[in-house]
Image (tube, rainbow, N blue to C red):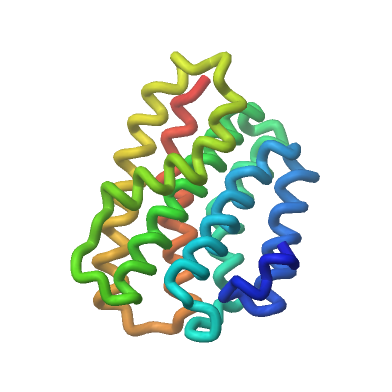
Length: 195
C-alpha cells in the first residue's frame, strides 16, 4: 500500500486507515476477508494513474470510513457467531463490489463523463471487488447463484440511488462518504440468503 501512495489520491491518514482496514479484515475475520478491500485499493491506484488524478483530488480518512461501514459489520457478525464465515465473506464481497460500483460512477461523474453507466460500473465492481472473495466459496457455487443475482440487482440500485443523491446533496463531503458506505452495506444484504 505504501508503495502505491505516490499514485494514490489518499492522504497519509487515509493510507494508514486503509492499511488498518485490510489488517482488521484479516485479523478479525481471516485473510480472505482482506481480498475485496485490497482489490478496491488496487483499482483505485489504477484509476488514479489512468485519469491522472494525483494532486487534483485529496481523499481523507472519511473515504476509508465508507469502506469500513460497508465491510466491518459482516466481519464482526462472523466473529461474534451471528452469521457463518461463508455468509460474512459473501457479504463483504458484495459490499466491496457495490462500493466499487458507486465509486466508479462517482469518478465518471467527477471527470465529466456525461452519462451514468450503472450496469458497467456494477460489472466492474463485481468482477474486480466481489470475485476475489467469492472465489473461495466455489464449493457452494449453486447456493451462491440466487444471492449473487440479488446482490447484482442491489448493487445496480445502490449505484442509481447514489447518482441521484450525489446530484442534489449539498452537505459535507463526509456525509457523502457515509451514504456510500451505507448504500454498499445495504446492497450486500442478499448475503443473508446464502446458506
